[in-house]
Image (cartoon, rainbow, N blue to C red):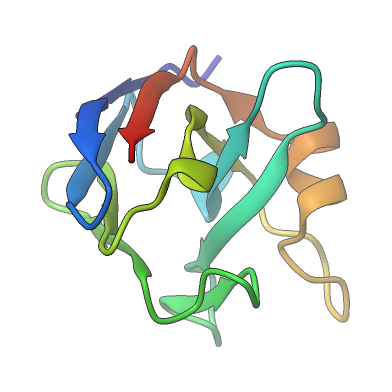
Length: 132
């Protein structure tokens, strides 16, 4: 069982930045497909970004089209920690942000929203609130 613990959320004014962290209990084949989701009350989780580590991808990142350019996903393998840098935040970015980690799917499948929700572990999340 992979444990994921998020931190770094909080309240920020529009235009501000936050960096979220997700500490993973292991760095194994179970965590080669990782991602950040966000969820607003009463809505389905929205995939924010993914990062994939198994060869030949080794750090390949993908982003939701609407968030590309403002958010950056990264991982520090020495700390088993996934990050999400969020800039130019607006009230629509408000929500519960959680990370997910799972094994990478066999090619040609991709590290996707349905894959992670169906096959991955997830953390409890950290709340982000952006005020105008």
